Amino acid sequence: MSLIPVTILTGFLGSGKTTLLNHILKADHGHRIAVIENEFGEAGIDNELLVQDRDEQIVEMNNGCICCTVRGDLVRILGELADKKKEGKLSFDHIVIETTGLADPAPVAQTFFVDDKVMQNYLLDAIVTLVDAKHAPQQLDEHHEAQEQVGFADRVLLTKTDLVDPADVEALRQRLVRMNPRAKIGESRNGVAQVDDLLDIRGFNLNAILEIEPEFLNDVSHEHDDDVTSFVFREDRPLDLDRLEDMLGVMVKLYGTQMMRYKGVLNIAGNERRVVFQGVHMLMGADMGPLWKPGETRFTKMVFIGKELPKNILLQGLAGCVAKAPAANARAKKAPRK
Image (tube, rainbow, N blue to C red; front, side, top):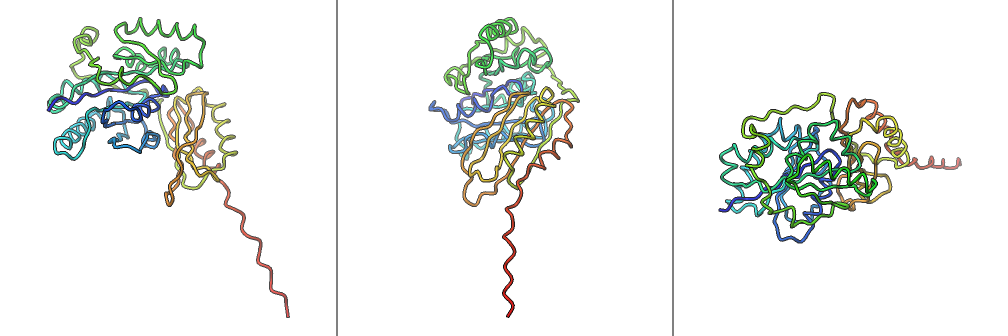
């Protein structure tokens, strides 16, 4: 069997990885893709946001970051996928690994050169890094992971360029070139990019990486800042839209600078569609998702990642957005006395 090419899709929190991945899954490119997605917190939401109407295999990895605490899970999952492909139980010809926004791509890439079974079945095709033009200057200043994501990239895609001045986009582009002159830089508008320039490009060059990271093939340890945490809000009862909007508005006003990433699927009272909700710092928005299926259990699940967020206060505020039950019918009229 020929080696299965793998694309590592990375980028800091809120850079648009899942949106781009949806485009890749929908595009008519002829690839049969298996997806491995990793999220930082205790529960993922991206699986709810990905298209589910095709034959792609989607595997979630939660409860830790793929570059450190669950690296062993990545090796195991890759092994299981390869075995099932050989046995004819699964059919795919490419794998995309969507990392959490806090992942250092070096330990993930290293997996394809230090584990024998992975080396026998897979080829690291490219590391594709998304860069949020709105927030990247601050992220690159403050977060080592954001710098590593750019430094190891074979392709860099700028996102949200419509939210900043062209001069600022050009300044960011020049900064990225200085950080990684070998990576081709393009743009992704609303999650759309040229798929042929992302998959099967044989962009990863181990010798080039060893020139800048001589210790790349040695053990790469990675730890996250203790002040970056996550929590999940879950609720099966429908939410009141007006109260939720008020709550989220206050939340962003008070804690927006600390809210590195937040997203979710909402069950809104009176709405027959899922509402897909996403935000980064002070930027927040929502779109209509697919219809709830007949008999499907409706739910709300929201994931928050940030620095020193007051978890209990925010959870209580969100719990207060549950829609009130319809008023009970007026008391039955008493039968007239005889």
